[in-house]
Length: 253
Image (cartoon, rainbow, N blue to C red):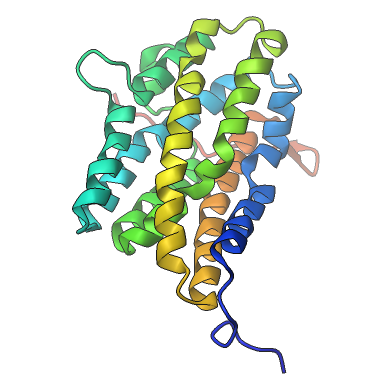
């Protein structure tokens, strides 16, 4: 009979971190939609759909981080974590991540109204992002911090877009790429804090370490479902030869 996680010795701190980083093999950078994006195969409409839908995720980030703060009694952690909110909301005249994403929308040909109205956001994206916010509200703050560790894998994808988009999508205004440049440094700082909390809190037993891996997988699933939904919303599909009909949305004037 194999030993249960409760009977196994916890991995060392280094081994545990390696296990967390191995989860990057399931990061949404490997989703077919993102592979197409990197290879320059997306249409203008598909990129616009991606930007418009991902805005719903961007505006959720400060709410997620606020939920973590509201559940966290540790003053020192709160002092460090609160910077994430100002990074996205902005301070005074400084452009935050949300405004930078709107500028990205402008760069791909969307108006501010098209982005901020959320009219292009698919139901699947809404469900996935809302599930992430609810997780942060309802679970212990250390678990919510752990769920943020998909940031471990983010700097690479940001650099990839900065490097490849000007060649792959020359019609995009490069001034709109400031979001990705901004996150290159912010994400590395955020990873250091989030990883430290996770390694400290979950290293007490193998069972806790496995729980952390499951939490990180939940967040990876959220990002994957977002990509699934965007791909469905922006790709022409047929069912038994009949064009797939998306849910009609009735707008009341």
